[in-house]
Length: 463
Ligand SMILES: NC(=O)c1ccc[n+]([C@@H]2O[C@H](COP(=O)([O-])OP(=O)(O)OC[C@H]3O[C@@H](n4cnc5c(N)ncnc54)[C@H](O)[C@@H]3O)[C@@H](O)[C@H]2O)c1
Image 1 (cartoon, rainbow, N blue to C red):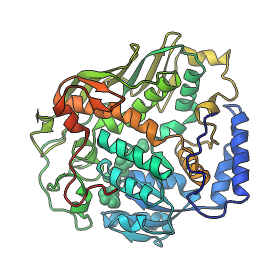
Image 2 (image 1 turned 90 degrees about the horizontal axis):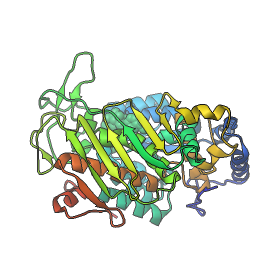
Image 3 (image 1 turned 180 degrees about the vertical axis):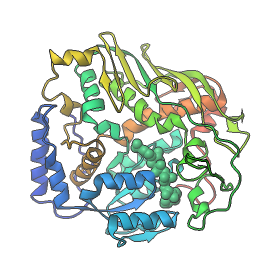
Image 4 (image 1 turned 90 degrees about the vertical axis):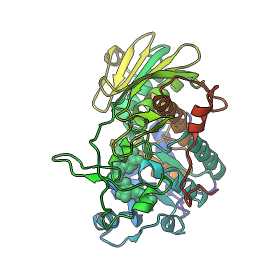
């Protein structure tokens, strides 16, 4: 079993754990021995509920509040930071009866000594900086995916996580969906597909928008702080009948390279993660060596940058092939059924949020997985039943016990490197060779310059 203790000395809650620690270790041991179809779902939930974790929220938008809802039985929300005062107030009313402290500046949450556990659910361009500052301040963090906008940011996060030993769960909750993704990984891990030759992540493309006019910033929104490390630019907004409004702000930030990687990181963070997890379980320990393919953008690009700034600019369609030593390939595409296809020399399976199918799945009727198959791929950690709640239970449990959670920063960065390389290849319109050991693009200075990004003055990451 590969349960990994990463922070033995300082459980995040810092509260006496006598009794509970032993009970939970007992549960972990029990989970190891529990058949994959009959884990005891209530046990961690009861423990976490009887001793709720004080938590600070940074980013009270769609996912921040959705996540709190999944974890609400187990947490006390004591502080909220959002640069949109209406959103912060709404979250306060919904989760804390208006009693949480509310801030415009997230650093006020990080500096509080009474909060050891944070949830970061800001837009993608605002993940790395608060996450690093939080780890350096001794906090454990559940941070939404994708953790970074660039490969350089990923290096920094891994370094600081190693240095501080903090517990960081990435919000890739598919890693805690037992009947679908985790079961798929167990099938791989038990060798039922044989040697994997090809994996495919189908993740959909980004939408287009019309020209979005410059608009006045709503009084509740601090646009300058929303932009933070991203380049200074006007706020844009356009009502869109029956749909979400078009904007470069709330939610729609995902369709702008200034704040996101588009679908390549938004959904790549989910299905490329599953494909990469399968490859690792199957013994493909080396990273990629090359990536090639094509992508279509809604605006023209020059030197890797969009030439227009009034509409969405991330890739609407794409197909990339990622090569690994030994001939294994990963395909990343927008145009087939959303999900992950995993193909080995003995069979193939397809998994998404609605189904897990393929002959090796049908074969389980006559040849079930061993009792410990799920537990083995779930790092021997205790299991709660429901998808989103389980991912939170896993985080809160690992934070208390000093264990590496199921979606750790290292595996996340490994696969996010692939998503970012696809993004660089898309923007430059050419194939890339990759030196995984040194995390450098081979023989392409312009592409290597895109491994990092400049931060706006006043928003550098301070270490
Ligand atoms: N795991 C999943 O399945 C999943 C699903 C949806 C979104 N997400 C992720 O969650 C994150 C948020 O997405 P969303 O759809 O909730 O976006 P959103 O725009 O609805 O919410 C983001 C919130 O962060 C706030 N914010 C921006 N800058 C801030 C700052 N400096 N300090 C504090 N608050 C700040 C915004 O005002 C907004 O309220 C994204 O990274 C996204 O990829 C994950």
